[in-house]
Length: 348
Image (cartoon, rainbow, N blue to C red; front, side, top):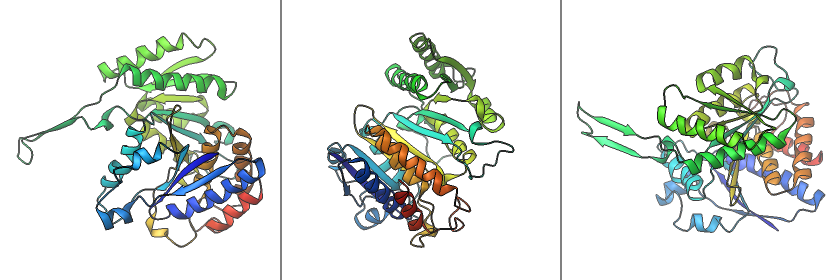
């Protein structure tokens, strides 16, 4: 039995999660996968009522589940940063979800802003270190509020954190397809210390994977090549801040947030899966938001739980439904949110 904790979240999050659960339930029936879903009301609305982002026992409770399925976090009446730090970052850090995994894949009938690029040109994965770097919040102020104010935020990376991320990426590159190429994206010419640690670790681990070709590109060059020649990439591994930036770029070149899914992984613990797009509050309750990314996040979750055939079936059904859609944009898809969920579930 796989126990799934569901956090529908804010805005359109509950709508896309509803369709994702619809598809997951259909896949579970077809492939005889025992799944149970338990919902939690953590998000902006609860925060506005209680002043609490997560209850004290939230992380302990989530450790009792096999995976977390997240809709979206973000409420227009809550100051930016409160929910993100109090829910998303807290869960990533305390559950040690040290890998952010982002497939960047262009499906047929999805428009990319890149001229003359086709599905065979855009099919790679970004592995982002997820619990270190600038996001740990190490730093502070000196003389805050005065003309002499100083703000310091430190990028902290550990050998353990870097190595386990790099090893995950090499393992992925080895098993993913026939290319077996891993690109480290960094800034070794400027970030002297942390990037020296990253590059040395990368090259040392590479010796244990002679069948995988190691590659390096500065992060600014990576953004350039992602736009000009995305077909050059197979798997990219990078640190937290750089990864945060290029995963959004990846979402755009694969057709937008409506099709971009991701996972926050602890391969030895509890992982969390989500559509990359935000809560999109202006579309709430209209049944016009695109649920494809949430459905694909559900497929990623099944894959992580060891149900590859079911995950593949969901992706295949999604591709068939996308071929009938007019657009990936909310309100212009040619179908409602619930209709798309129905069609993917029926197509399994």
